[in-house]
Length: 397
Ligand SMILES: Cc1ncc(COP(=O)(O)O)c(C=O)c1O
Image (cartoon, rainbow, N blue to C red):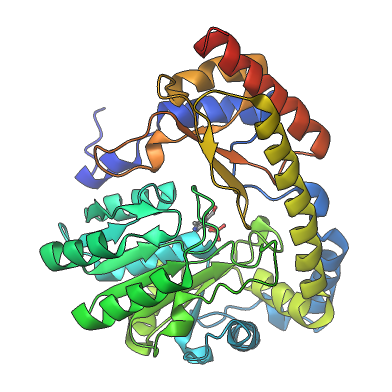
């Protein structure tokens, strides 16, 4: 039987990289590939207690709830976002979603017609690109440096393409691990107002900040509540398995997204939402996040030390100030998609850079390394393996 799939599924095909990485998950390979937190740091007792507290109230927690999600958790999120300066939204302007991934999907579903333009950083979050492509939007990359999108190129492309939306991960981005300067954040919001463009701010990593003396104000906090959709998640700070994220934004957009969500899944897992509410109330979530920051910073420093020690010609990177990733460039002769095959055979994995790029300007010598999942021991061992693979196979040292 030949199944007549819709045209849009052509964007959902598995890539060679994904197929290799699937094998990695099962084997004995040290993986720097996934954007995963460390299992050992999961607050198991806190999660268990939160579920016990949820069930302590009887059978009611097992019932359907409203599409927008468990109201007490949305109220807690109003307070938590307020601490970051995001004060434009009340609980009715927050939609709880199945991870922030679903927020990206629902937003795209209600906003994009075929051919609508989205401006993005380049490289940017791969799974957002997949969503945008699945709605047949047209993705245009904006030139960026380590401080964010370049002001001139951004304005030029806004004028030229009249985009519907600008998608950004401004704080400890995936994959580039960088953080936008305040100047670029302000500039982005000014342009959004000047040209009436929506900004979609994706902020899963903002809490994993290493130097707490610096301030990275979310773009949503610079807005007046009209031009920014802000999404974040409990995946990186509590556990991904609860599949709970949220999106906050202008009432009209959240209302339509909520209608789309109703058609999609009625509501996200309400037990997770209730447990997370208890975690925010009865568990020291801020203390837990503080611990994550310290441990992840020390792992980043180990990876940095190993990179410095590696002494690879042509190596360049920006030291991450938070988040989960190192984004590195190797010697220009190295294609990291080819490197991955050899590296996996030697026992170490990473994600090649190419899939994160939009358009022709692909840096084939780039790769993303996650530093949060592996133990310090494995970090050192894996970096040693990776360095020797690069030297032996590609640089003929
Ligand atoms: C930039 C970015 N956005 C969104 C997500 C989705 O996270 P989740 O659906 O687990 O909340 C991720 C996950 O890695 C991410 O890196």
